[in-house]
Length: 414
Image (cartoon, rainbow, N blue to C red; front, side, top):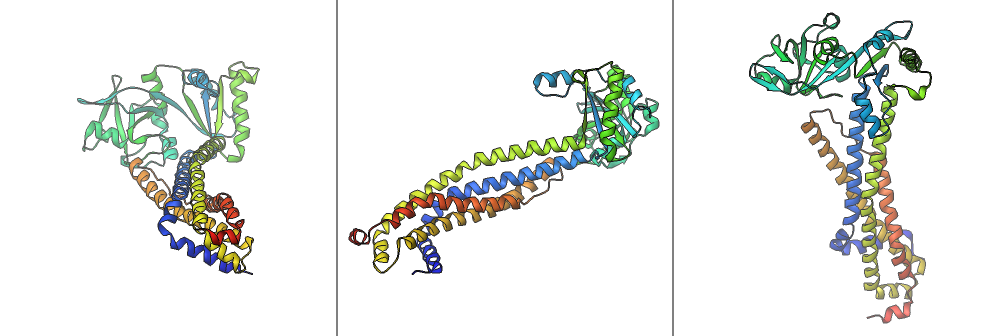
């Protein structure tokens, strides 16, 4: 009886005797596992970054938007142009009797206006918002000055905060704090300049932030907001506050059927769950597409193993003549195929981890974000199991064919 240890050593020796062919055979496996590792690693980094930025608003934050919850292109267009979120709605929600757990709120006004200083003109993202909400959401820091406060918001003050790119476009390398920029014919004094590299949920590097009251009164000229962010005292009270907001909005808009709501409410937990689901499905889909290369690699392994069986026909006959059983021949060729694909899987995991680390560094540098490298341990284990499984599946037929050879016919083979 031939020991299992001898069978494994024989399989390994056979692979070493044909190193170049073995290396070319597992190329498809290596590429497939490397690509899957890279996709999962980048997907994990993207998910961590997005969730960190979305979570930066806090688990106690609720977002109220006009229109219906977008479920398709038509709903999205309707939501973008909806004006159902009025100033009176926000004033009503700010009252304790309507939303008892509310501690702060900040309406948002999105604008598309050029910004000028002297003869320089730039087109940043102009927003009316609360500076404190912006700092909390983006973890922004200031290179010059600081944020405007609640007094400026209440008095419709003509003040602004600008990002680093907007500063460079308008002022070059000169200091910008306390200088005046012009938007839609009105002068705004700069109270703070954001440090470079602030990205967050919004690209604040290319942002000009105004008090939301000033943006609405002097620039948009409308009686509505694009969204409102509301913060409650305790994350445990979020769901109760969501119901309070819905009830108050329906009373204000005379809505009795919830299906006819002209607003929708989102929480950070819901947004995080949606983002996690979308990224997970996308990563799984891309991994499944890339996994096709594993099938191609498996077919290559089967072809090479069939050639190997033919080349080693006399060896098979000799081994059977001196006592090897069909089972021993079957196991040796199965071990050869499995070891071959496992080596490919190990190489793929190593390359995938290296490329994933390099990709994380490049993305962090090019996008100026805190992109974290994630080593996909689960994908590593699955990749190794799959690569071993490919060897078993696609090496099964050649191994069976080798084990069925007659020793007499095999010894006569030329």
